[in-house]
Length: 199
Image 1 (tube, helix red, strand yellow):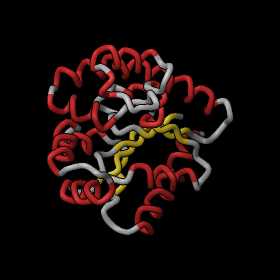
Image 2 (tube, rainbow, N blue to C red; image 1 turned 180 degrees about the vertical axis):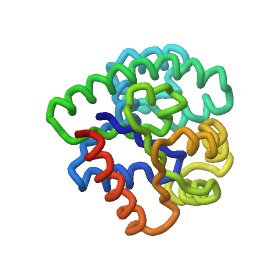
Image 3 (cartoon, helix red, strand yellow; image 1 turned 120 degrees about the horizontal axis):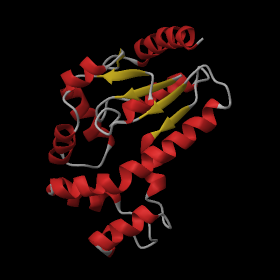
């Protein structure tokens, strides 16, 4: 069984994924896979360089994600182009990783993806979990964590699926607006439910 875990920026997806990991559940992070497909030597990185030039690369040849982010958030058509280059490759690699993990025989496997619904990756999973926090908290947590402007965080929030729609599409919700103990308690209950369902 494959379980998709998603949530808006700053909702604490990685923390929740680690809590599942502590209970022996392996996880694939779509963000890590997205970084893999634009690593030096990968065809996607070369396509990005050809379109945007050397300014989107660091001196060591790796992708300057911050610069690319600035470029694409100013121009929606560029974001569409970038997604057409990266999303199919990310999806293909996720499928490969999932198959490898499933062969190891865990009760279920977690696919952590910020754009689970937006990218159509929810078609790869049997069950979806949304990590949910109020938008004001998403904003304050992201500003505290990342070196980005409020304008940029608001642009990211606007590009993601609306809060109410993500909640409506979830098979289960984890409220991550309180303390860690509260989150762990919910993970424990859901883990037990998923293990039963996976049998």
